[in-house]
Length: 409
Ligand SMILES: [Mn+2]
Image (cartoon, rainbow, N blue to C red):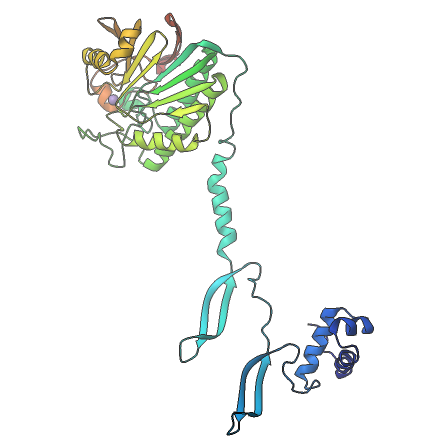
C-alpha cells in the first residue's frame, strides 16, 4: 500500500489544474507525471475539494434528472455520480476461476459481479504427471536421417510372422519361457541383426504377417475359435509394448532404407488389435514422408519390378487359393511380372510350396510355443529373415538370424 496522500498534496493538484487549465500542463508545472496528477485530482474529488460539478475526475455519471417548469424549461438538475470503475480484472498468477456470482436488478441485468478465484493447486501436479507419462516418448518422434547411399534396384522384404506378443509360456510346462519382456527384447535383438545384414536397398517392405499380438483383447481367447490363451494379463501394457517394439523396428529400418512401407495383416489371434496397432503407427509416422503405414487388410499385394508380391496371415486360405486369388485380383500385374511370390505366417514354420509359378512361402516365428502348441507336438525352429529382391531378377539374396533352442543358448 502506498502512503495516504495529504490534503495539501491534493489541494495543490486542484490549484494547479485551475491555474494551467489542462492536466498535462498542471503536471508539468508541479514536476509530476500526468498519471500522478490525475490520481491526486481523483483523491481530491473524493474528499470534496473540487465541488460537485459534473463530472469529477475519477468519477462517472450514474444518473441525471431534471425538474421542469410548466413551460418545460429546466428549473433544476441533479447529477448523481459515482466513482468510476477500476482497471480490467486480470486473473492473478497461480489462481484459477472458482466461480462468478452476480447481483442483478429487477430486470435481471448485472449490477455487480464477483469473480471468485482459488489457488490452482492441481496444475503443477497435473503437469508433473503428464511429464512423467510422456517421458517414455521423449525423442521417439525424432526424424531418423535418411541413409546416404542406397541401391535403387533393390527392395528389402522383412516378413515378421507371429511374434505373439503378450503370450506367456512357462518352461516346466512347455520347455521354454516366453513373456512380454522376452518377446520384445528378442524382437529388437533379431530385427537389429537382420537390418544390419540387409543390403542397402532404397526401399523396404516391413510385413507384419499377423498374430503380432497373442490376444485380441482382455477376454484372452482367440476371437473365432474361443481357444483359451496363456497370456500376460495386463492387456494395455501388452498393447503398448507391441506398438513400441514395432516403432523401434521401423526406426531401425528407416536408418538403413530410404522408404519404408509397413503392412499390417490381422491374424486369427489379433483381428482387431492389428487394426489398433496400424492406427497407432499411422498416427505416429503421419508426418514422416519416408514411412507409409498400410490399411490392415487381410490380403496384400504389391509389385516391385519383375516380382508380384502377395501376403496373408494364412488362417483363412490354403496356398493353392493364395496363388489363385493373386492371379485373379492382380491379373494385370500378374501378366506383367516374371516372379510371383506369396508370403504367409500362421503355421509358425518355414515352408515353401509352389503352385504353378507361384512360390507360396510361410515364415517361422521368433515366439516360443504356448501350451497348446507344445501339447500338439509342433516343433519348429525360430528365426527372422530379410529377403532382398532385385527389380529385374527377383529374389537376390536373403539373410537370416536363428534363435537356438533353449538347451543350446
Ligand atoms: Mn495365427
